[in-house]
Image (cartoon, rainbow, N blue to C red; front, side, top):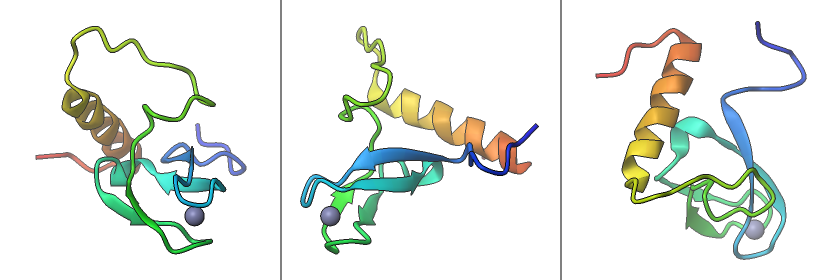
Length: 82
Ligand SMILES: [Zn+2]
């Protein structure tokens, strides 16, 4: 079930340039995105934002976490990843 007021394919990350809170699509994780406020470019990642629940990264490559998130987002969208 998807709640209209809470888009599960997006997460929040602070802009490293201006510090504003941005809503970023989970599918853009690991890719370069641009702040809608200051126009600054940065790599989308949810592991450097200490306002979210910290992840356990016990030797686990970050890429696998990204893949998992993309897979999860794709599943929500009804898209089958390669
Ligand atoms: Zn910014």
